Length: 419
Image (cartoon, rainbow, N blue to C red; front, side):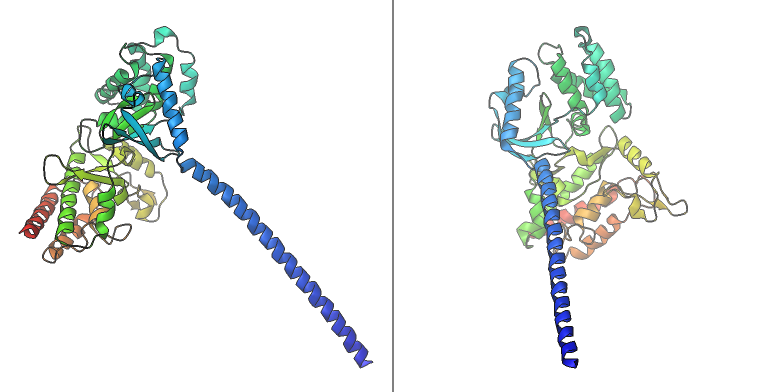
């Protein structure tokens, strides 16, 4: 009897184990199915993102060909349409696109240039308004009143003098040789007016603090190509006499850039996305040094724009100062009200000291002046630490005394290496 009970229990337990194994296998299959479905969805999402940010040479070439067809039909104009459509400017590669303007690289008589393409007109009210345009509305006076005031003044803080300067440049580009505007030319102009980067490029076209603006063709604007290799590679170089001299000269060029950014007629131009990859450098034509510029104007904000940005931040709840930062431009939290102060507490010199010159604050963790010559290290470290400290007062002025101290140290170190 006991043997029969034992045998029955064995059979029952065996069935239970079988059921448990089947259930386990079923669960594993369900989990694998869910994982596979998730991977499929993720792959599709990644594919969509990749399509958004990747470059398609055929699509880019087709766009430029279509632009040139419109130019030959008289539907678009601009000072660079002729060289672009007669193969003086030769397309070489697509560098990226997405929510920002489409970025293409080209070569113009042996010089690399960048084509920025504004692909869409986002303001639907403007599209509706354009369909109502009559021939008599396409003259300079109408364009001045309806375009200049509604677009430029909003972006450039209602400064009529500044707005007129930008408008005159763009009207000459849009209207072409005959001075008349067609419906299509107005559409192209509106697309450019929606780009803050383009408007700043026009505004600062005579100043050496941003890439040079060469001209326009339709909804394409052409700017100077700034090579990034120098600043990307130098922090990783083994320090020898040659590499330190290059680093020191690049440091001097960055200090010159800070000075130029402070001296525009429109106030300080703030750079708020400070990192090695956002700057480029090339050899100066007038000295033995370098010229450093941001590779894009879209990391720059005029004083009036910065005040609007920081005022917007004043509505944000905060518990830490970091909650109030605008990218690399520093803000501060009023801990009693738990609101951000409507001011910036850093300037271009502070940001470059924090994020380019020094190691502790840099991303990735290296600085332009790492491994300076032993005789220079102690003095340079003290100066960088002092320079990198956020200001205790809002909207700090650049310390030109500190810039001169940096310049003196760097020039001294270059001379010592040469000797």
